[in-house]
Image: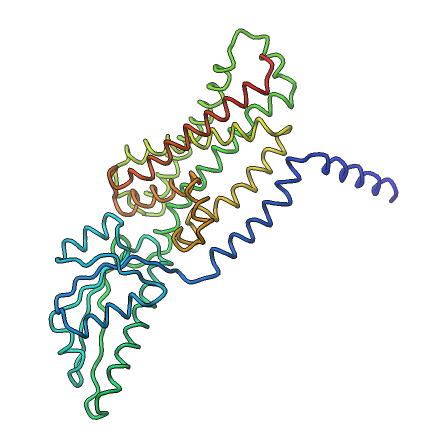
Length: 372
């Protein structure tokens, strides 16, 4: 027993001396729990609402105001046609569109009558779509009851019924929303692991010194490691797309070339992050553990669990620096909505900037920490 305790004490001392691993083991799990609590502690809010008011009456304005005053909705745009609403939903500028018919008040307050109000909901995120319908029905029910209180009991109105048209995911199939996000996350994990163990494996096996005396440059070594990680990432990415399309019957509505091109940009970015991890760690085990802890943290910022707009301001700032967040948005948009490059220019631009920043930082750190 004494021998076991002595060995445990030795391992504890060794862990305490490993400052890099200790920081990741203590700080990251606590941070992740805190961030997830902050992100999921409130309802989905700030949902962009577009409205086409064909009636332009006091009651239609009350309806719009009632929705805008809720925590969930933010009146974003007043459209003038159905086509305009479709464009707003298709390009991602609005998440829900409300169409107020010209006979809203007459049908809503006619005894026994019912006003049919069409609604277009972006179904790419089933959690948000469910929140939209629940919040909208609740706000409309409250408004109808408030107005009904001024009417005699013998002539109670029929109320308002929503006719929902779910764009991009008609049945609100949970898999259609989540599996494309998993495609991005799995690619992230594979590329990061391969890149993170590339250089540290050479140091751990003692072969880095042998590479120093070989007729190759530092740039050639780094590029060789990076190209292998990119090849593995692209093959994995392509196989996952085939599995989604043919195995799970989720059609790719966008352009395969666009998705692959932006996928290469994302992989380059993750190779930069992985190389940084490989440089600062001292063993493959340490690198893998850091990748695992970072992956849990990235899930929080990726928008997979909670929409980015629902996060506190400081979390939204860090989410903008997450390559996985931008690539998840790209994969969802291309896969589910058939998005084109002009619709993704912001996410693509941020990914390009992050790719340049991570690879440049990794190269500078590698040059400073190696004797070549």
